[in-house]
Image (cartoon, rainbow, N blue to C red; front, top):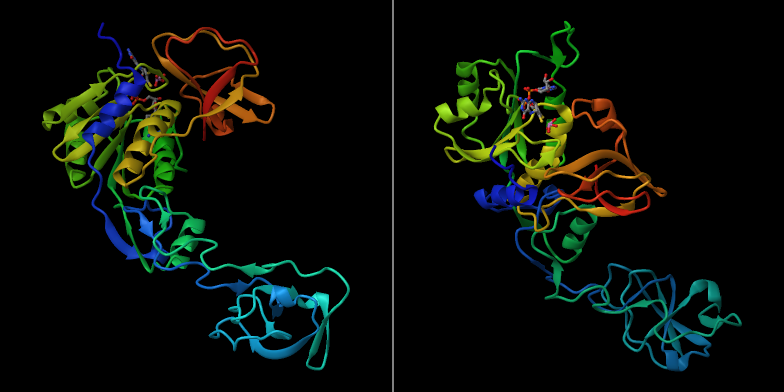
Amino acid sequence: MKPLLPLEEAQKRLIAMAQRSPSETIPVGEANGRYLAEDLIAKRSQPAADMSAMDGYAIAFDDRAGPWQLVGECKAGSPPCPPIQAGQAARIFTGALLPEGADTVVMQENVKSDGAKIQLIDDPSPVKGRHVRHAGGDFKAGDVALKAGLQLNPAALGHAVIAGAGHLSVGGTPKIAVLSTGDELVAPGDDTEAHQIPASNDVMIAAMLDQLPAKSRSISRIKDDMDSLCAALESAEDCDIIVTIGGASVGDHDLVAPAFNRLGGHTDFWKIAMKPGKPLMAGKLGSSLVVALPGNPGSAFVTATLFLVPLIRYLAGAEDYMPVMQSATSSSMLPATSQRAEFLRAKVDGSGITAFDSQDSAKLSILAAANALLYRPAHSPEQQKGAEVSYIAI
Ligand SMILES: Nc1nc2c(c(=O)[nH]1)N[C@H]1C(S)=C(S)[C@@H](COP(=O)(O)OP(=O)(O)OC[C@H]3O[C@@H](n4cnc5c(N)ncnc54)[C@H](O)[C@@H]3O)O[C@H]1N2
Ligand code: MOO
């Protein structure tokens, strides 16, 4: 029997087949979730000049004892107010530029005013530079504000805008077709006979793709019939990725590989040393990458997490496209693994990680109750309770 392809090698081979989608320039307000295509260089410094962090009075520290004669008012959105001299203070508000001659702000709660005369109320004595945000204290013009390959989230978008960006150069949104096969599949919510099953994977995989910068369409519930399957595959050849679900194994009605071959597809790999997910297949059909996920829901989810999602992130321009591994202590003994790496549906919390007793890849109840995939590399020895193990949060 042909040995199974090691997991990491298969993951590398899939990425090696891929080409990143062309980048585009879009308004910053439309870039949430996209990957930055090039380093974003700050066009401005923040703050652009020294400004007040409080509502109060701008003074010179050397003149800290006061009292001061009130001259001028500095507010946010106005050019700097006139310089102050020794013995003078300027009324100032949060976000306003400091007038020349001032280097410190006293909060209004710490003074009393008597007409145009301002005086400290006892302590605290002013501290030099207190309540002043200095020019460039956040970042300076020319700094790298955001690194290429970063996924833009609300905070990063805020940073991009304050750094002066109105538009951003971002990776593309790969086009994906998700095609499910099986005579037993029925639409969500429809009545089922005993030989039928709701097409749960279609919705599950589509929901995983919804969280990514991708344009996906569903071609659901293709019959187990060569002509129908070939026609469905051909109709998706405009896509960067064609994802098939089910029919990936070796049964007489597992027609994904035969249909793919009939259309002249090139198989790069099939059958991975992993559990679940062994029947995963990947290749090329014309210019489309084809990722054939196994039909069992647990297997489809795990292979989508380890192969499909990283592939989409890569095409869309991500720097870090692989799943993030975290670690936790195992709450139970874990048996040795074979040549297949294992991804156990598990629950992780502050006290450790617990794999569910049953790991049947057809059981959605376990998958839905899990918040982690506990990773056991191939050929791992038995691990005792309390051992440090890796997991992917889901
Ligand atoms: N002789 C062998 N049999 C099997 C092997 C093997 O190596 N030798 N591998 C097993 C493994 S591992 C898996 S995983 C399954 C995967 O097979 P397929 O990809 O061909 O999947 P199907 O047979 O089409 O379906 C399996 C199971 O999942 C249900 N399914 C399929 N699509 C959907 C969907 N869109 N939504 C919900 N459920 C779906 C389907 O009804 C089946 O119950 O093969 C083993 N067999
Ligand atoms: O490996 Mo299959 O993907 O166990 O159920």
